[in-house]
Length: 274
Image (cartoon, rainbow, N blue to C red; front, side):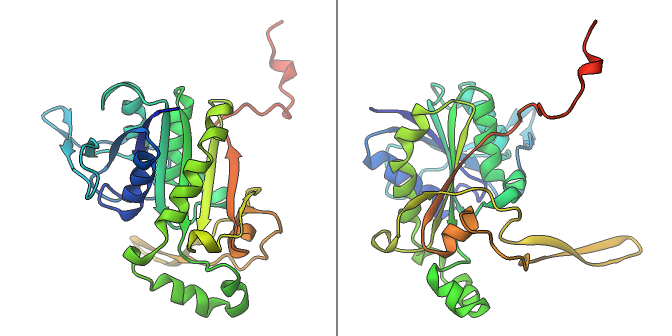
């Protein structure tokens, strides 16, 4: 079945991951349009921010290499903003599916709350469009990470983006598309793939959200009039069966998540209308 798919990201319109995801969707016969931030917008969650000129949001044509005929736009806005205007017809007929990614770096654990990649997917789903967030883990290298520790992570981080296995994440994502379209529209599939050739991928597994992200922000220094932050590894044991654990074992991990739901385990019954 041919689907109209809007592809966005938070790494920017020129990032290699978005091109790989668009290429895979086109090769599978889908009707694809690409709209992504003009500049990197990582960590923006579902923010609604946009750059205006004379009261109009900036939208520029941005053809993608080797994808002639695929409409592609660089937008002066956050991924969540782009998702919102896309489902309201800003880039042609509203999409049936929004794919966000492929992000450079895993979006795993509860840190997905802060991800612009996941935030775009949450925004689309909240507005009636099925959505998937797709990320490539550029820090872990499967079993080698567990064996070699920090040295393997450092080596993985030095790999050129052009040499990473974006196509592995793209294939996993498009293979999961039937599961996405069969599920409830308010649920987002969060997909993370290891940076491995597809034939070395051990499989695709359902993973629970780890209680922490792959990296976390800390306050490195504070003083009069300033704060300096840094990113570091959490230093906690990865729980078996979580998205982060599966990535280190060489599996792609998929988790069904929802952005905003009511909490039913808090007793507010005395506030009900009489």
